[in-house]
Image (cartoon, rainbow, N blue to C red; front, side, top):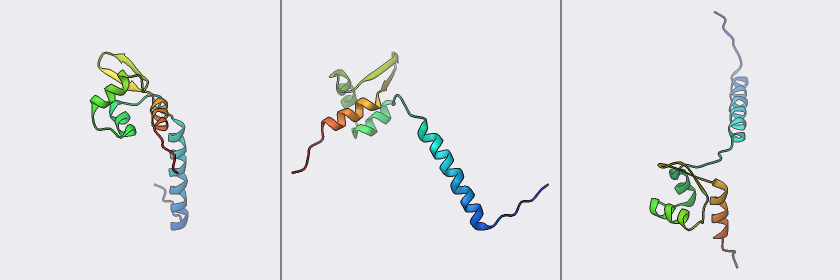
Length: 89
């Protein structure tokens, strides 16, 4: 068995670099579709009925790969939110 000793400062620097590297790889992996729960969180709504109404009125894009699975386009959700922005005076 080999034992490697490093100074405390070097150890924490190594940990920070590992965390940064993992974070950069995660951010590169962009989500194309959101689950209903994620979409509701983004929109700030608590009701699946509201989410369905937005879908039915064509306010947000969605994909329905099977009868029970509905996924939402994050770009259209952001566009919908931006369309509701009110400028300050």
